[in-house]
Length: 335
Ligand SMILES: [Fe+2]
Image 1: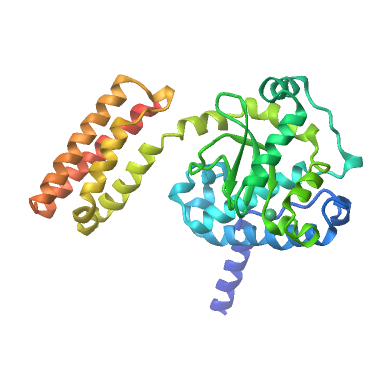
Image 2: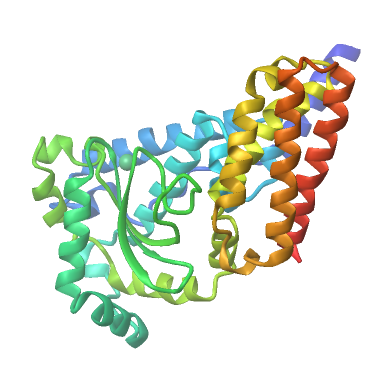
């Protein structure tokens, strides 16, 4: 009886508190996107492929602290996450955006705000040229991936592309910003109807893109705090150093000094690169540079101690200092 009660309690808890990502409902029927995308492709793409990203993302974060993060927080620091999270969080975000901007022609709003039109004309000359740039990005993306129109941290439009299920919010992307339009160029998006003719699929898909929705997304992106967060999150040398520091210091705290003894040279190299790197504008100040110099010196000292086969307790003391210095840099960065 007690066991039964426990099982019941767990099930109720799961039902009440299980949060997670879910597959968004498509606003139109699978047949509505024809003739540009056939119903079977839409159905498989949405109900099988996208559903799999959602299921696997929920599996990958279940029972971890990552459940509490927003999708944007998950994506921004993706270099710290597992491949499962990178592929499936990206897959869920990217497809959700794709379904939003695809609208059967007769249902499209197509009202483009003047500010969006001016930005397109100023940067690309015309809407046609922008479409050409997007087509170029989509057709030259090798293998599977996405073509994007994004708003960058300096509030400019940019056409770019990413591989697999990456996207421009992720810290692994070379061009970063808020996506306002994404074109799926995975073969699962077009192969049934177009086979290997990606160019024909691209010509077709432009008939389904609702530029009115893209225009609204542009306006929202301009004031979205995520733009600043992406800019502040753009210091890859800091992230690279942090990764090695975490992978060497935390084992030391648990009595395992092997990672530090084998990677102290790498830790020093990352500290030198960090010290020489250019911080994002808002963090580019003397106090931050000074703290980075101190951190580099501390890592040099640790590397020398490892070379001299110093005792574990000595290494732990010096690594604790390095860790504190690193957090001093981080704290300075946030003031
Ligand atoms: Fe897809």
